[in-house]
Each structure stands twice: as C-alpha cells, then as structure tokens.
Image 1 (cartoon, rainbow, N blue to C red):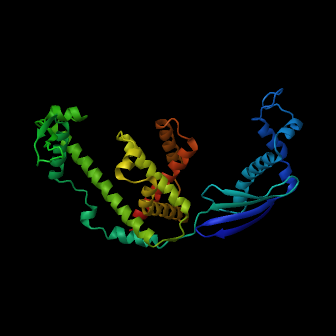
Image 2 (cartoon, one colour):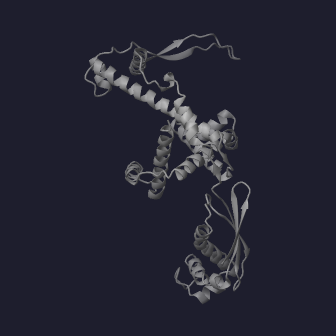
Image 3 (cartoon, rainbow, N blue to C red):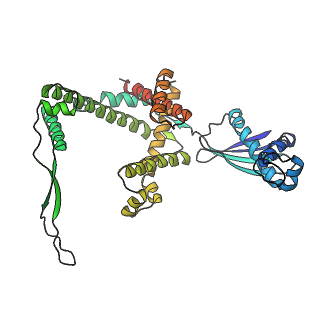
Length: 359
C-alpha cells in the first residue's frame, strides 16, 4: 500500500494512498456475502443465496463500494499507527479510484492533535500560589455566616401562605387593574432540638451548629481552591501557543448545548419553547458560546500536554473504583466510555494538584 501524508491548515492531515489490486480483490467475496445477507430473491433463503446468483442481481458498483468500505475500515487504524498520526476525529474518506482488478485509490482527511507550545507553567503556578492574599486563602467561618445559613434553612422549612397584595396598578387595554399574588413564609419554625433532628443526624442545636460550621468551612475551602485553579489555568492558557482544531470546539459546543437542554428539561420545560422565548435558534446559541467552547477546548489541550510532559497518569485502582461507581449508577453506560471518562477526570485532578504544589 502506497501512502503519502500532507499537513493541512487548522491541524488537519490529508492521507492519500492506493491499495494494490490484488489485496483489494480479496474483499470481493466478503463484500458480496455481506450484501447477500440483506437481499431477498424468490426461491432462496435470506443470506443463503449462491454467489453466482447474487452477481446477476446486485450491481457491481454496490459490491465495489462495499469492498472499499470494508478495506478502509480495516486499514485505517493501521495507517494511523504506522504513520504515527494522532487523529482526534472521524476520518472523512473519499474514493478516487474504484474498479475491479485495479488498485483502490483514496483520500482521507482527519483532524489531528495540534502542536501545543506551553509557557513555563511551573513558574506561572508558583507566582499565583505565592501571590494569594490571606483573604483569598481564608476559610474562616463567621458567626454571621452560620446564623444567615440557619435563617435560610428556617425560611425554606416554613409553611407558605399565598397573599394577594395590591402593587402599583398595571392597567391593561380593557381597563382592569391587577394585583400581585405573592407566596410568603408563615411564622418561622423555632430553632430547637426537635427542628434540627428533623433535618438530619444531629444530637441538638449545638451539634447542628458545629457541623454546619464545618460544612460551610469545607465549602469555602472548595470555592477558594476552584478560584485558585481558575487563576492558574487562565495564566497558562493566555501564554500557550496552539492551533485549535475546529472539531474540538464543536465537541465542547455540543457539551454546552446538551447541558443546557438537560437543565431546561429538568425544570419541566421544552427546549424548543425556551429558545422561542429567547427568540433565538440553536445556531445563535452556538455562536454565543463559541468563545467559551474554544477556551474549554484549549484548556483540555493544555492539561493533556502537561500530563504528557510530566508523565502524570491516573492511578489504575482509583480508575477501576470510579468506573465501578459509574456503571453502578448508570446501568446503560458504555464501560469503555466510562473508563475513558474516569481516566480523564482523575488525570486532570492530579495535574491540578501538581500545579498547586509549585511553591
């Protein structure tokens, strides 16, 4: 098989080649058999039609196309491996020569992992970590924060009453005035042992306050960590040089759109109605979020490159444990995709921990 490769703009690669006639011809019988499985001819059972009968009923071009598809499906992974091409998208295949007893000519275009030139990410991380103020690092919880949270909980547990209270009159064309119906909490429940015990495994009010304070502290710590990580990645991304493949941006846009649609559906609304209310289309939404998607795609490339450079990999035992939890929670999940997701999430976490330790 003769192969030539050519790098195209926007991190794409063109592979052009020919498969020898003798090798291509070996797919003839396989292709005819596969086609025969779906052909119906009177007097023969489906899938049991003799080859000599099939050749008179099936146009040769259909057999040739099936031969080409079978051949390239088998050969493409080998081409990618032999040529050391880091493909990141489905191949776009076009046939340039197709005839019996002739070489199979083809062109394949695929997006490839772009070259990513990282800045001194260790120094950037170190400057950000050492430059954090005491306020930014603080996870101290004040009494006011505890009391405010308790008040929010009491309000959420209070029975609601509907009050139709007049607001500034709003006159419609018909001339009628409308009042505003407001849902307000009735008397707040008393903060006592019985109340907190109904919320969870708390001994009394003091125990509840202590554990609530711990939870608030934990949440503030998580928020501080996320803010620091965001500063670090933004600092690295800003100085990273890379050519962004369109396919990666489109993948991130798909994720954003899927999450948006899931959130709207979870609220009991139809996504189509939501878009109509906004007077927007899916195309409009994709345009709006394009920069966000590009940023997320670039972040993925940066994290991946740092992991490669520093030889950071996920712990196999942690991956196995994570996969088991995913498959337990989502019975229909694909094990292979679950494995990839777990490896990606755990590797990313180790990369962030590595960056946070540059002090």
